[in-house]
Amino acid sequence: MNEQARKAIYILLAVFTVSPWCSAPVALFMGIVVALAIGNPFIKFSKKASGYLLRTSVVLLGFGMNFHTAMEAGRQGIVFTLVSIAGTLLLGLLLGRLLKTDKKISVLISSGTAICGGSAIAAVSPVVEAEEQQMSVSLGVVFILNAIALFIFPVIGHALHLSQQQFGVWSAIAIHDTSSVVGAAGAYGKEALGIATTIKMLRTLWIIPVAMLIAFLYKSKNTSIKIPWFIGLYMLAMLVNTYFLQSGALSDALVRIAKAGLQLTLFFIGSGMSKQAIRSVGARPFLQGVLLWLAISAASLWAVLYITYQ
Image (cartoon, rainbow, N blue to C red; front, side, top):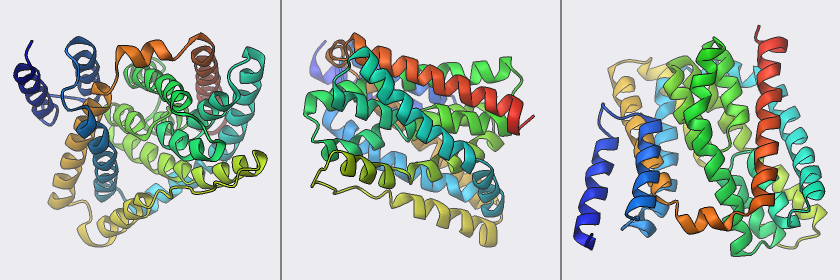
């Protein structure tokens, strides 16, 4: 297949992802298929655009949420957040030692699972002075598990008859990346989406203290940490909606744009996968990532079902 044909197919599929007939899981699946079948002809653009598009989409989602309701959801999820982050980091490092995973890869996988996937890995990598290969392996593990979660979490939620609140909290804690959290919660329902997005945004703020802690433990002089400023814009969008728009027609339009943007983001993320990236992961890092993910998923699901949200 020539380059022009590859570009045409990619553009057509990208356009389809923002249509009403597409969904978040379908968009991610199409991206992965394109990447593995014909390759991504716009790999540099899609990788750069996905980050900006994800942040913009999350901010726009704020225009569909009530600030007071969202903050209450965040307040209720704060205990889960603190316990799960600390527990995931400790368990991840323990698993890494037992499996004899490369120490830096172990820290990156543990941080990505505990907080917010690729964003946490990107923040912690310079602190531990990780090499490009170590970052690639860690990101590969997180990507594969994110893709699986986006497909199976809504199915599990419906099978267990989880409420919107239960699923929102569970997905925000147990799924790595913000894109997959929002995709899975959005597929489950509007209320789940609001709860999951807010808890995940508050969770993302923990990148800063965790990276600083790791820098202290590693005695690293490189403490430059990217602060997730877009979370403030997300909060501002909720305030504007609560006091001015009041979930009217404009709010609905902005949320529809946000969901379309998220679907395109997932397509870009999926199309960034490659066979080489999958092969580079390795058995031990992948096993650490899977065991850690299963542990946090099961523990948070049990807590949601039997402790707080009965």
